[in-house]
Length: 236
Image (cartoon, rainbow, N blue to C red; front, side):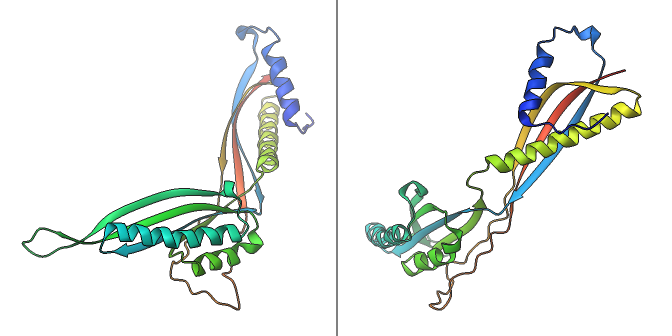
């Protein structure tokens, strides 16, 4: 049997036709269930970073006010870097006491630590190193990331899906040929998709900011995958 390349629309058409042909279960031919996996990769074009300010003071109010002041400078630097408002989101604010522990004595509060963290999406990866350096210079003393993603994953996902479909069709044809049969139709399809991402690179909060060069960034590739479960009907 000649292997035909199925598009997503073709497969859906076959599935609809199969569901409406009125064939009774007892009249079905041999069924074969196949699990198929497809992957497609692309250089990511969006980076996610977590950036924030940690301040300490003996008084809780002072810790929070110092943090707010430093955070204002940081937010101004984020906006100056050209980050849109929709790509800036507060992810955590906290105030916690610092204790001094001595033997046989009740722990004593000796100060407070205030934290304010925002999640930022950077959509111009060629500027990411400069953005990170600018945030550190503006007072950020906590930076985590980046993690990379594909801004428009649809086409990449479609490619992975088509690869999985072709793999399933090829294997169904092999099984049918080995049994002296042929593939009659696709009975059902179910999908589970998984998005793959490179491991985030943890950036040290005490990294040095050089005037002559920005922090080097290597986005690599992001791989998206699709897992399909297909049932084919074989006939003599």
